[in-house]
Amino acid sequence: MKIVVCVKQVPGTSDAKIDPDTKRIIREGIKSIMNPFDLYAVEEAVLLRERFGGEVIAVSMGPERASAVIREALSIGADRGALLSDRAFGGSDTWATSYALARAVDTIGGVDLVICGKQAVDGDTAQVGPGIAAHLGFSQAAYAARVVDVSKNSITVQRMNEDGYDVCELSLPAVVTVVKGINQPRVPSLRGVIAARAADVPVWKPADINADVSRIGLDASPTRVVRTAPPEPRAGRTERVEGSPGECAARLIELLNARELIQGVHSSCG
Amino acid sequence: MREHIQNRRYHVEIIPPKQDSEKLDADLAQFADRYRRVMGSGYCACITDNAMGLLAFQGLETIEYLGLPLPADQVMIHLNTFHTKPGLDEILGCGLRMGLKYLLVVSGDGSDRLPRLQPSDVGARGVSSVTSVELIAYIRARYPSYALGAAFNPYEPPDHEFDKMERKLAAGASFIVTQPIIERHPVVDELLRRYPRVPTVVEAWMTKKLYLLSDVVGYKIPEDAAYSPIDTLRKLHAWYPLCGVYLSLLGFKVQYPIVEKLWKNMPEASA
Image (cartoon, rainbow over all chains, first blue to last red; front, side, top):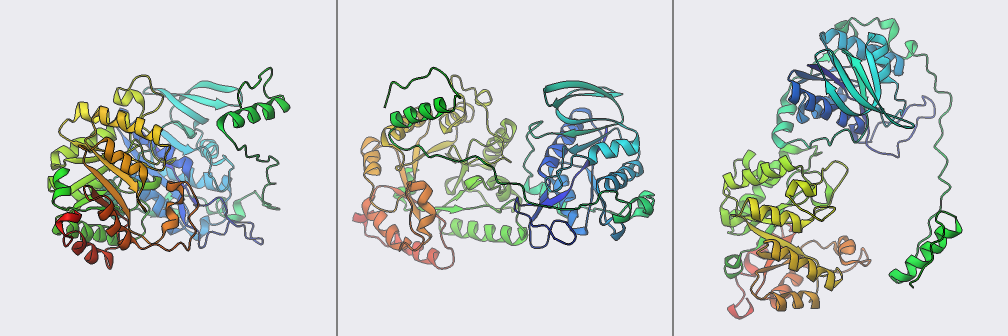
């Protein structure tokens, strides 16, 4: 099974600042990490390779420093990787990014499965995985919480939806985006990290993946960020309950009763 | 472990390089230097296991990768409950192959990136989660050649902590290591009264940043609180002359040469 796993380098903070002019995240001075959801994607790819054999190829798009996330994927068990990095890719939105990644998948050739994290924690769009499927004409399932079965020509996944789960059988090749909890990502070994550090990570330019330059970069991106703003603070408030365990329990019951969150419960202690 | 105390062998904590280190080569070199120094002093190197939930490389693989010696009496590996079952067995099997003898078994601090052992992994029944008690029992049953240490926290409610200690000893722990002791502690005195035959090692907090212990002791220690680690270490020897001493966050440049002479030069009556 030939699996491509898409990974993204994101700011390792929940307190990222936005450049008011470009409306983009200011990445300078912020430690970068692999998008947390992509760790689950890499782990799932490696688990599938361990069960069914084949190869896992990690692909990312970004500046040259983004090769760090490829190396992290290698340290966890990916066999090889490639980084799409060129000024021409700069400013790509999810549509242009998914086109470029689709071109990379096509260039690799013979890919059975593409796995992505459900979304990146910086953009939070969840569009790139489905976009890759659209560009390649692959079947797709987003928010997979479990791989149920894999056969020569299909993969069956349990997919999260707003009401719970459904089970989808996809013909291969396919794109699957995965949620946290589909697995427990392994922690890299020291030898894995050392080997990944020494690995060759090729940098692919648009010509290397036969990408049409009119379909990548800022000019090819239909998305326009008109305004950014921090989310409204949550309206909830915290009340600290203090005292003996009995007093705390009694107060807690009183508070929950007052909000009609529980009914008919009375404290007999305190 | 009793020989460690009789031979005045300090337990020196060494933290392996962090997973996200941006200077891994330098960190590995520092680990190797410190480890060799501890070996050279005849002390016991104690290698932490993702201390405070911060991802670090595993102790045994770091020792093996660096080609460091592992004298059975001079290395203790911490092992907590945040592992996969295969990962746990790999560590324990690797330890046996390398000649490791001592394990300090703790519940540990987790993080989102760390898996947690499940009761079924260690054959535990009637519990909803794996604590050091279940892990000790598993290792005792499956890897009986290890000498297992258990942690003791005198800052927890004593009845609860002594109950846990009973269960840890019943599960197979054969020595005890306390949380950092910064003043003579009645609960530690009680521990020594209850278990006079169990070798006990008290932890000495070797950084001046006493406030870092606020969460451990359960009250706020001001950042400017005056604290002399070396003076406290001397007092620990006086308060607990029959105990070993575990040196956490020891400074290797300035403190180590002082510490090397300290216990060794104490008169017999003090030790």
